[in-house]
Image (tube, rainbow, N blue to C red):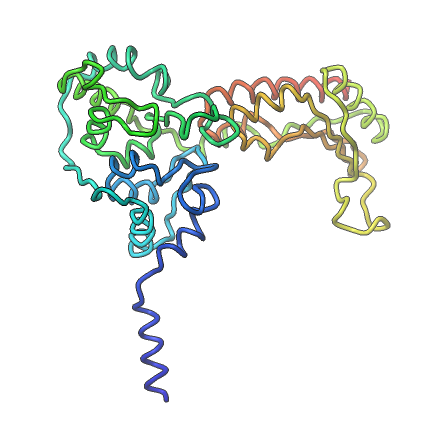
Length: 342
């Protein structure tokens, strides 16, 4: 019996990972159960599967997309990642997985910059920052299965070989707006020049932690009024900034019984619905910290007014348009706190 148990344990330890199960655990929530997309890009598009190699999938899972939804799966083993790739490849019915050599493409990046501006920037952004929004369901036109990705993202540049990028430019991607640039009249040398320019986006990235630490996590001001007077002042200031009041509640509401709630911690919710809609269209993840809210706390004889710092949060998203929206929100929050505490 002991030998049988040991044999069974050894068999379990050496069993191959189940790709479908791992995909369901780690990928399906964003990319869809069958790879049709959602928060993440659709992986099952034939034009996509036939134009990326396994090395691209492998490095994408290892590196993620810094500043975007796609995380780096550093804890998955090589065998687990390979199993997920095999499951994704099971959706590819008509062609074998491509394979690209890793030799760098030699081109004129200066000429490539001009061609990029003429042929690529409309979709991929003037600096390769990607299409408008994030490409997820809410923030892309409904007739597009995918939005133009950010080519300047270090995760993409670390995962995509020069020859994979070149092949995509030469052949396009069926089922997406990405066309063949050979058919658009560019020569192979022109395409090499564009690839060299795209590769020039690869610059040492500033540490995400350094960017975060450059801004305080919270905006905090002290009020000379009572807690009740300060809460009323916050409401007046928010309304004065064209926000609609939603509600106010104790900070601990829902966590403790009514008798145990700390009545010296009050949160005020308010919203400008146009700003909310515009921000969600840029990046739906801002729903994590919208609608707007300001907390008023009385402790140690002081009344403090505080809120999150949108400028710190914007560093998490790698989205220039969203950064501008967060800068605007920062100014609004700062004005509300200042008016409420004057």
